[in-house]
Image 1 (cartoon, rainbow over the protein chains, first blue to last red):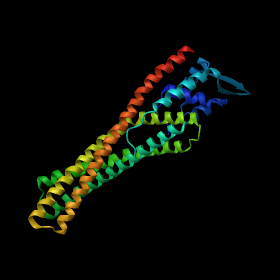
Image 2 (cartoon, helix red, strand yellow):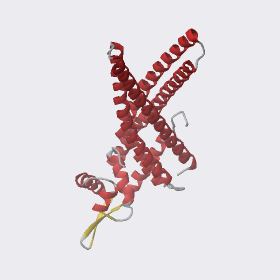
Image 3 (tube, chains in turn cyan, orange):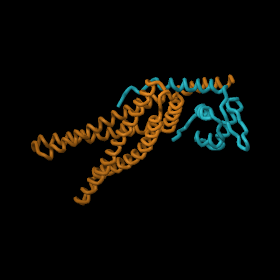
Image 4 (tube, one colour):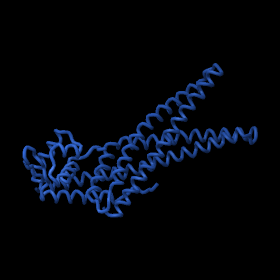
Length: 91
Length: 209
């Protein structure tokens, strides 16, 4: 089940998933993206230097760089604070 | 993930799931009320071979309640399915599983973003359903009161009174559930609004690199 995510949320998911090298197909399957959107997001992250593309034999894998850690940490911290407040009732 | 955060998530998911199930029960009752009103009035009209304007009006209302109840159930089922997936994802969370928790936060926000309209609709339908049952309950109690005064405490009158009180109770429950849904929506709308601020900060972070 995947609802409507923002680009920032998708970046975070890709970056966390690519801590270990992953192929393009792995990424779009895991992050539930279509090929076109997956390519756009991946290109953006590679251009930013958050992900590096590595050629192993005849396949290309993608790996998150150290540079992305700041983004991952900031994102996790800020999203965590969203859940500090609860609806004022319990069932 | 911190124990406190995990507990909060658990409580929130459980409350929302509970509300959705209660909403489903009210939807089913509205559907049942629609069927019973339509059929009762239709049978009366056939039996008496006389179609009174009031019967036509009640049949129309019954069909409207039937359609609304059916549509409502379809909507709630979608929500139940999604919330169930979120609960499953929550159950898989382990201790100190910070990133999976963030992933769950993303799923929850994405889920609400996609179902915001449906959740609002459920709150509105809950109000309408609640009001409908309040009216039915009030009419039942008044009719039972009049019958008890005129013909005494008979079993028929008592059952009518019990039916009226029950409908009144369902109506109050419907209104309360709708209110809780509105509270839930407000918290989630605030969270979504907060994410736009977060996005600004993340955009700055991306631009800085």
